[in-house]
Length: 387
Image 1 (cartoon, rainbow, N blue to C red):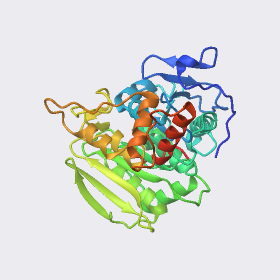
Image 2: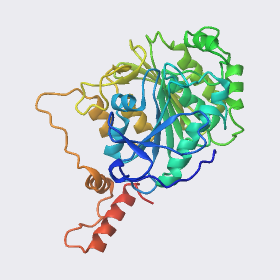
Image 3: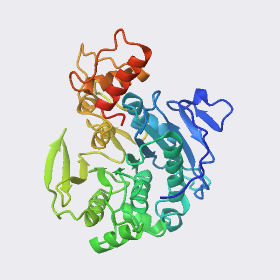
Image 4: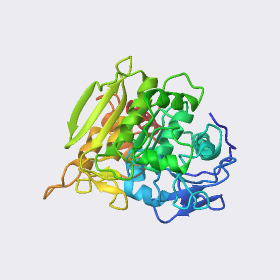
């Protein structure tokens, strides 16, 4: 994995960062800008969201925006920090600059930016390494997702640094390493001159010398996407299938909320790749804004689809539960009142207590401060939030 300069500049929230090298972002949910996280050869900006209560070994999601977007708008639309606050994980938002790309696209098609230990790929790796070290993040539970150029760049990171990520979700993206210039990039986006399976495998294996376990992959794509044709989703599945050694045909096909989900199992029978084909959707992130407790907000490339990709991706990674998915997708009905969720530490403890086995955690009533602390720690351990 890449190395990064460790500068302990982070606090639990931006308002506690007075005099430090962080800058609040007023366009989103309390994002803070991180600087001096490494050499940053790709000249990217970096924004971080930390929940009010940061438990030891907190997971991390890296979320990469699409063209014409920035970190704040992508966060607001996709709802990642909203879900992170509710469930207690951190979110890192790399951000492109116009000096690098006039349309704010990550340069997923430039060889100098997609190689391991070079360009934009190295910048993102440095961000992750720095945040993991500075905040006590669980390095075994780092995930990445992105839309469009951000989805393609998420795939770049998964290919170049498979040792860094436990899983990834590519939305409206493209396979890794199949372009070397802008002309080829547009051809691939239109589904023209598609690479064969041998080329897809060779490109992926060229990303790193990794020969260990490969990240679990989730792919999301609209059937009516005219910006990045849906054939690219099939190519991504084929590319990753070559290293997961899956069968050509999916092991499971099911309908979810009117959309198609295909799943491939690896040699041990575990889910390795899933592909959601979103019926009649164009280019964007599939969400459900009419839900009881919607995750995300309408905006550019944030599309109503009756399914919440954010909640389902988080569920796949163990960062959400079935209740989160149900509330993020079920239609709002008259008189419905969602169950209240306590904020901050109270919410974390309440969730931990709910997950704890009956009798494994005693009531905190009448306990000393030391006893209350013991109850909280027991609850967090029982819920899997603390080791």
